[in-house]
Image 1 (cartoon, one colour):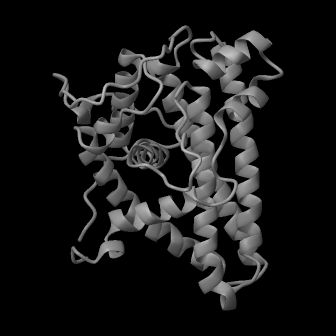
Image 2 (cartoon, rainbow, N blue to C red; image 1 turned 135 degrees about the horizontal axis):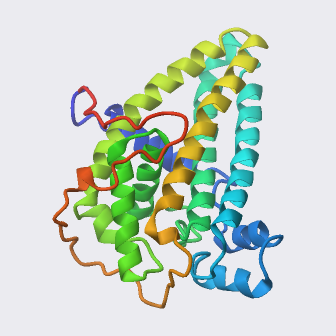
Image 3 (cartoon, rainbow, N blue to C red; image 1 turned 135 degrees about the vertical axis):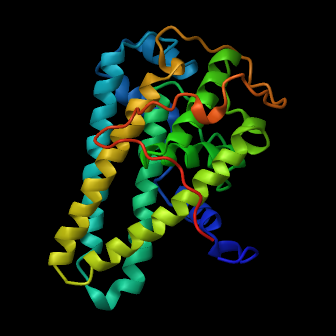
Length: 291
């Protein structure tokens, strides 16, 4: 692809779809409401309040409880997205131009939903603190990295681990803005976005083929969604739950992330946390998309 075409390059294509998905009705999860509902049957009111005001880790919520709640959320979102995907597969070949973009958008929307739920359970801050429709660059960056983890890229694993480590050390309530938009994490975000843009195109083609035959297409489309969404959500859960940020008793105070430049550690980003945290499939190395 020629540069300068904007939306035509893989990175821009992925970012545009992610942004559109993040703006869909019902996609954004209210952190306080979700944590209160998810922890209601497992924790005391004091622990829930502390989990909301600080983090579940600071509240000392047992890992077993968080894992159970996370699995429940994954099952709920997987069932929902699979049913919607199957419904979108019913019209058949004549409706392909309308159903394929909608199906991809709702699929990505549910990926954003489960990413938020898992992030909040494992002590990440509110990803959508602004009530408006805009999505800031730091949120776009961390969601891109989360998607990269879900797709099994080692580079995304490393970058998410790096961000989590920074937040853990700084005892912060917000995402590290400059790290995700200007610092050493930013080039990795761009590379992951480009890689995911290529994968998104392949996935869209597979979904288009599955919808070519009415009714049968519905079953295939729903099954394809189930077969991809579930392991990806599990992969993100496993990675987030393994990070220091999720460890019990990690407290958050009123300090925010230092917005200064990110300093390189002695260990290169590409080799930090590169061991596989995924489920059902080995991590794959990030490859530069072909232009």
